[in-house]
Length: 380
Image (cartoon, rainbow, N blue to C red; front, side):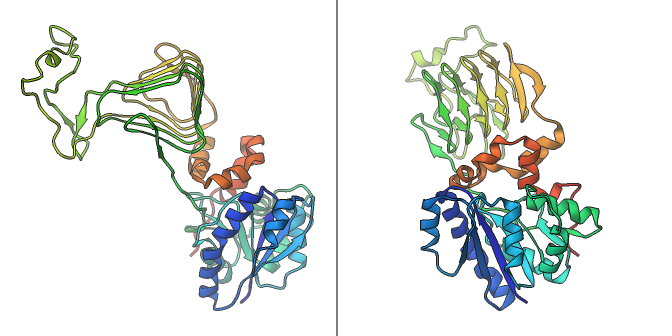
């Protein structure tokens, strides 16, 4: 049995390079499973000199220049130029996991049908016997996005759509330390002028997710005070420096008597956590205060005071902040949380930049084709 990998290079050079580098271990695993070499066909429709220059340095791939050809045309071109038994089709806006090719090709060979990544770990690539792909793709619209369109046609024609685990994307949850002790941030996140991030005890932690937009005059403050053991149970200790609302004074009297003994945190104890999820937009002058989680994809309105958890993809505002509306329906939120684009390699996010300009439905159908028209069927 023979396999052709079709990769459409229509993104930035960095994304093309990252995608091809990710394919190397995936191709090796597929060749080991098949016992034969795999053909790699790169359709360069980018029209970019830097992409063409990089592709000239790539060994073991056949590069077909096709400037200006869209994804639909690239699939048509590839299917006309291969004699392989099975075809895998994807693009350079994503980095396939090392197990993706072998997992998908095995199912395509033994179960037939159209093969997609499981919606639990979605990816914008498909695989199928070449004859089936040609039949499904016949007469496709010129502007069609191949992966979701193939799934729609397969379902409409009664062709099995097999959803395969292990066929997803490379993910790397990156967190880098900030200057403030105990604080970390993900890639892409930025903050405006006079941004304040403040913690008060060494065991407290603040996490800013990836690709967050934080406006001017925003304050993120974790006063601390609570300690937890390794199992998450709160420890009730008499610690120095605390403001106690239910005692005679909120002033931390203990700081006046530094020679007096007070409880020290036991080994393994952890403090409070304030978490700003990924892709959060915090408006001008807002404050996030205390041990709260601001959910991924949420929007915090200008001058809002957030003192309780914010659900993912919610819009909140006011003092104290409350949910004003949801950004999307629940099913859309669930798909976005499965796609988890914020955990892709940074080069892949940059390469996919034009997909972020499209309606969210088109974005999701592209990056989660296995959920188009219903969940895929696990292979038997």
